[in-house]
Amino acid sequence: MRPRQYAKNAFIFAPLIFDRQLFVPRSLWLTFLGFITLCILSSAVYVLNDIVDVDSDRNHPQKKYRPIASGKISIRNAKIFCVILFLIAFTMAFLINKKFLLLCICIAIINLAYSFRLKHIPLIDIITIGILFIIRVYSGAVLIQVKVFSPWLYIVTFMLALYLGFGKRRAELASLNNAENNVRPVLDGYTIQFLDQLICIISAVIIMSYALYTFSGPAVPANNRMLLTIPFVVYGIFRYLYLVQVKHQGGAPEEVLLSDRWLQGTILCYALSVVYALYL
Image 1 (cartoon, rainbow, N blue to C red):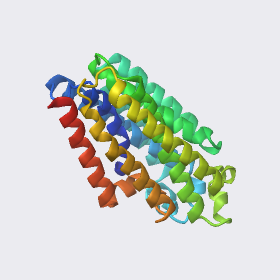
Image 2: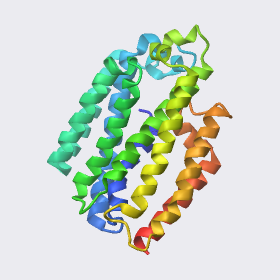
Image 3: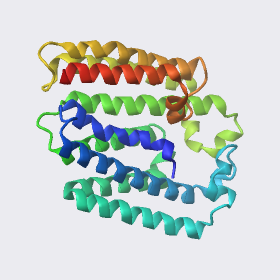
């Protein structure tokens, strides 16, 4: 079910926070329910992905230990469990908000396309992930009916997803030898140099887009206090780049997030600075 991957669904809270509704009980509750729904839906997709990739996972040095690939869970039981998870997620989405249900269906369809085909196409694989992140953010906006949500934040979200995705591909490429590349054919479409160029471009776009948001966003306070959050964003981008290129980590961004204290501290400081700038 990949509970460590649930952090990705936290992007649904972005509209709640940046539209200054964090302390509105109804909005907070709806967003939390939406987050739980997306987590269940994500788990359903991961189970389906493991069913589809069972043969290749058995040849992978780490993935061969996954429950389905290792034979601890039969494919038949995995399929039943997958259907149950999808039904729970769609039922919750229907009860919360009809538009949210449509977005959840859209997420499921894109993930199906990703599992069966898109993840094998270089560049398209990461762009698809970026689109899914945008939908997560938009679903949060739908749930609480935001007054004004800056387009800059959609750009930052998309670019951040690309940044993490290409960073992950770079770490995977650096850690696998030529024989193991056959386990993930998409890696044949990348090189370390190409990925470094992409990461460099995207990191610059993230910083510039976020900086523009801090003083030109429609819901940003006129006192320019949001500028105080920029250093944390810059350091977070550079820190992850340092972990990928110098420490050779980043193959699983969620593991980096859960293990690197400097990155955790940066995120905490960023969150506190945002609350100070927008709410105090």
